[in-house]
Amino acid sequence: MVPAAQSFSPFYLTAGAVQLRAARFEGDGSRLCLILNGQTEFIEKYFEVIDEFRGRGFAVVTFDWRGQGGSDRLLPDRRKAHIEDFSAYDQDLNTVIREVLKPMMAEGNTIKPIAVAHSMGGNVLLRRLHDVRGEFAAAILSAPMVGITPRGVPWWLVERIADRLNQNGPSPDFVWGMGKRDQLKLPFALQIVTSDARRYARNQALLAADPELRLNGPTWGWLGAALHSIALLEKPGYAEAIRTRALVIGAGRDRVCNTGAIRAFAARMPHGEYVEIDGAQHELLMERDPLRAKWWAAVDTFLTQNAPAVSR
View 1: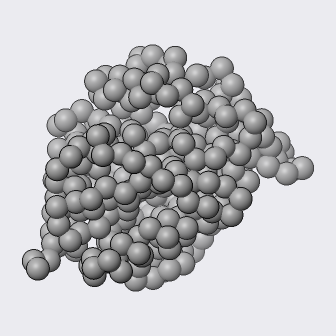
View 2: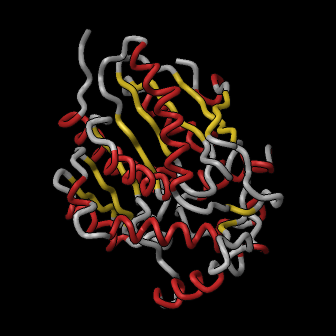
């Protein structure tokens, strides 16, 4: 199997008025996996994960959300992660499913795909699972964004500030402090997403090789849209309406998403299974090997039970 880093050949899809950068990686079996990354992330960051799924017999499809990675940016300042409404991300996901995933199924892979989503990608995937039933055999949600940790600021104050700054429309201004936060220059000691210095350095090297991939952080418009999408997921009956079998994995030391909210959401899902990895920070798949091993042990058990390989 040629490693993902060597076989990476991106292509572009049209989603409304934007171009999305996508990629397809062949696997050794009949299984199919869609990987949805988080806010500020990009395809190359997941090469290791892609190859781990390929080694388990999955072909893999993934892409960059609008406004990040190699997809079209939405503001002249490319450093800003911006969106007006998460329905735009719904359009991105629908485009990839319609134009890439379904044609691959038609090529002869009759097994339903699985979906694997991190953080913001998990938020968008939950919206899809709620609205479209029976599309995926199973879903794996890694630290999904069903709640945000405000880091020392009262939650009600964050919501009030976002509402005020977005009252005349989604604000393109950086959330306070993000303008000076250059991801390329952020030292390991100041980041809050992983305890693995080696993988952090690897991802920083990817950004150094292609600085156009990086983002500083979100705008107030993005944060307002995120809060509205989280509020949608919190509505009574929303989680209860998701029928897909799902493994939800929380990070015990998450300082980005609210692990308590993740745990509570999983408990509301009729077919939701929750696993928490003590000591892990937000980016579970970018963590140290012992923590990743726990992630994979939970995932392998879940897939064996809910999306097993089929012999041909």
